[in-house]
Each structure stands twice: as structure tokens, then as C-alpha cells.
Image: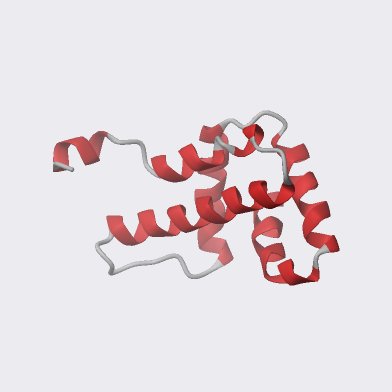
Length: 107
């Protein structure tokens, strides 16, 4: 992609596009996959922007970027979507590591 096209693209556009899929999915596992992919795309955007010299390492660094992505994705009933996913994560012990991401998103 030419530099001029990249500079006009909205920051975190791929992560925002991914999060917009949330409402169209039915199962909590699919919805969780969207959140995990959004998180991965968010982190990849930072690494790409800084050409590998910077990355997100703490929840405090993630939070303002997640807020930006969530606001621009404008997912209808976002809190209900997160609660639905959270209920699923709590009944499946194999998803214990995903609780951290949900906690950060709920903040």
C-alpha cells in the first residue's frame, strides 16, 4: 500500500472492522473469536506503525486504544454482547486466559 493511502486510513481500521462483526454472530465462541482477533489486530497495528520498535505490553496501554476501537465500531448493545460472552467464558474453564481481555473491555 502506498504511503499516501496508508496515511489517510483510519487508525486501527482493521480492528474496528473486525469488531463490527460482533452483532452479526450468534454463538458466544464466535463472538469471543472476534474479540480475540480485534485484540490481535490492535496490537499488530501498533507494531506496524512503529516499524517493530514499539508494542503494547500492559493493560494500561491497551485501554485507551480499545476505547477508541469500541467507540468507532459503534456496536449496537455492546454491553449486552460482552455480558453474553462473559457468561460463556465463566462456564468454560478452558477459556480462563480470555477473562483478562474481557475484563479490560468491560472497563
